[in-house]
Length: 377
Figure 1: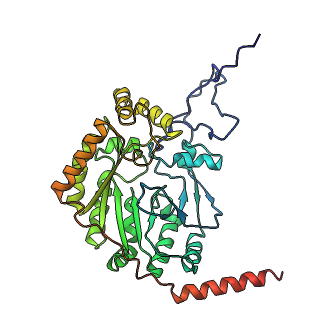
Figure 2: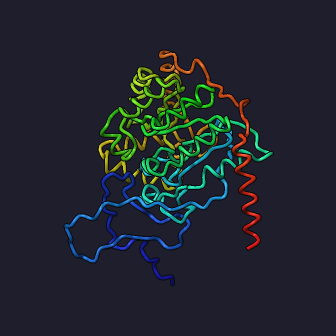
Figure 3: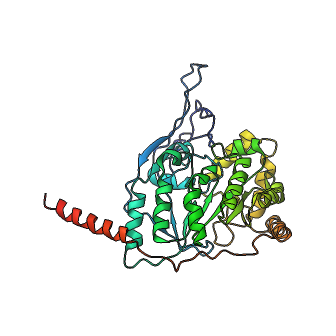
């Protein structure tokens, strides 16, 4: 006779303490870990508040910087991610599960344990100067935000932009942070050569919802201000109303488009909420804690866009969903774009200006010479 299986969770399990300024409410183990971490109590009731959960930075010793992509529903084939993990803490971020590859949690670890790439500019210079390299637009902000708060001090993104500018290699950026305006000197100069465009991702105009859902991203009015400053500097700028979450922020789509056009946006895009892997549980947990009155309705509407599930991974469906609710969102977006005159011009960034600068050739020759000399020791 088989003995009953041990319960999955002990009776004394307790929830993770809520951290101010963080999006996730828990820090479950990586899906690749055999051992699962569970917080329990010894019965002592201690009222003292825990210290804030601080961000830690770790060097990423990657040997390449350009990531390649072959997904048929993504309009670029190469991208750069200066950081792994993102301090913005957006609860819906589809990049959260990538932290599991590092043995870290897609929950709080994703927004507090950040890997940065200090050699990014040097690596990029070598890859762009390689004889086999063929120029095309480099996308930034496709996985984690290149202008998350740690960029203010680290300046990895700025160093990458300088290299792209020197090589005349075009770049497209998506960000939620006003910090992008710091680099208007580079982006404005690149835009005059038709080498740069920027999209600001604006999920909501409700500052309370934004603070709960995207705790360390710039406030909505600051993102609109960034659109204006970029547009005034001559940088082609657009807005991503993304992700649209039915029953939570989808009613704001038209208002976001209107406000963005007034600020200077000329292009727009949108996606619907994606909940792959661990994000399903993280979002469900966040929703029930922060918007309990809407939780069941929001989850029901999401399932209606996803064939009865919370997520569809198929290309073509994962970004837009299916069914009447998804069709209505698509129709509303198309009507708003037409009414506001958005997307009339599709910027075709210039790939014909690309050239390896002499300074890069010299630097690479020096680096190879130094490497040969080091082998002598």
